[in-house]
Amino acid sequence: MVQEQIIIDRQKCTGCGVCAAICPYRVISMKDGIAEHSGVACFLCDHCRAVCPQEAITTPLQSATLGLVTIEEKSEVIGPGTSNVPALVALMRSRRSCRNYRDKTVPLAMLLDLVKIGTTAPSGTNSQGWNFVVLPSREDVLVLGSMVSNYYRKLNRMAANPLLRGLVKIFGGDSLGRYYRNYFASVAEALRQWDEQGMDRLFHGATATILITGRKTASCPAEDALLATQNILLAAHAMGLGCCLIGFAVEAMRRAGSMRQKVEIPDDEEIYSVIALGFPAVAYYRHASRKLVEPRIVRLATSRR
View (cartoon, rainbow, N blue to C red):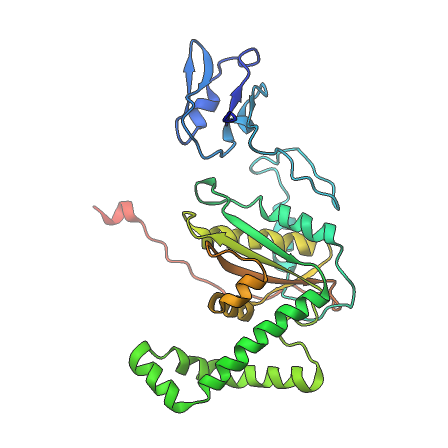
């Protein structure tokens, strides 16, 4: 038996019609003064349940709570214009990429709560096509780091060959040449420091990692995964953790199928973020500065005249 997507309690419904007006797929309509779901598949945006003043609507296929363990979960809705905007901006500006961590394990419950918080991000057509892989210990991070390092050892050997760079440029563009000019030397030095000194220039001593993937069939998997990533970054900072995006690991995992298999990423998903996490060993006293930006203001309505 197929479970209903939306259930409307006819005894509670007062016929205000706000659920029908807000439904983006128009699968809710008014019949005899009562809201009615057409039974046609919708994308479960949950707007109807959230907007109903009588709590007459339930969406049994979804959970109204996140099930957070390490922090208090509040159910109150913060309406537009009612939050502390300066505090929000200060949080955004205070979060920095951390590259210096304490030798302290992040509790698994905190990592799982971060994943749950990540899922509060918006997604195209509410597909929620993201997935998450949690590596909960420093030992796990080191295994991933070793795989990533081996990938770049091979890539550096290829890039160091001028004949191969020339052939790739002729037949496949200048990708290997660009890598050689922009990254070869710094990657070689990072590998040397790891081999000779045990210096972790990739994960910077982080004790946990969260990988974020997106289902390839989703309408906009990259955007969905990166929005979830930002939620996790901000929440991690608020929870007392440091974090850093590891782009070199993302690129390696996109090109090395064996790495994807090792961390159990199926073929129908793509990797978009690798977040290093841990308790920071450094404190910052000022916000990060930013380049001033001048947006382009385009008045399309005026230009048509």
